[in-house]
Image (cartoon, rainbow, N blue to C red):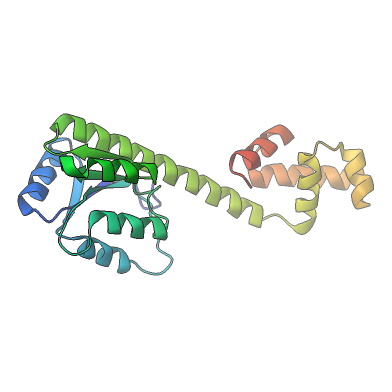
Length: 215
């Protein structure tokens, strides 16, 4: 879920052929998927450039990208997306002619989600689009989870962080009290506050939470 309501997946279509973009948009609408079309890689990148500083992707999306286009090629745009760190949250499916298959395979090895050879099966293409959107949703959900835990960590006092670190190491309250030169009762209070702020019930749950999110 995005902060303002249910997430709205979007499929970006970047292809210089108007007829193909229109056909893809119709196909996606038939499966209740929204799309935005761009006639060139430059136009798509211009859209990205207009996003305000600090903007972050909140809704799932993916990109259907033609390999060969006048001006900037699909491969060049893909390289730009890699530089922007976008291809995990915005999976790229290349649309390719037979001659471009080796190039598309190489792109997949560099992180593209998949490639679909023209002419393609409508159902197979939309199935892959839905899988790409599911991948994007998973990436964004994981990021929101990390952001939430980071906000919770930021609310801890320095002493609560000290206690949390030793709790995660498996130290009993008595040893924590000795190391921090505070009373066992004070350790218990800090431990309770840490669990409450981090929304966990046990030291094991806390350790697993931070480990799973690599924090």
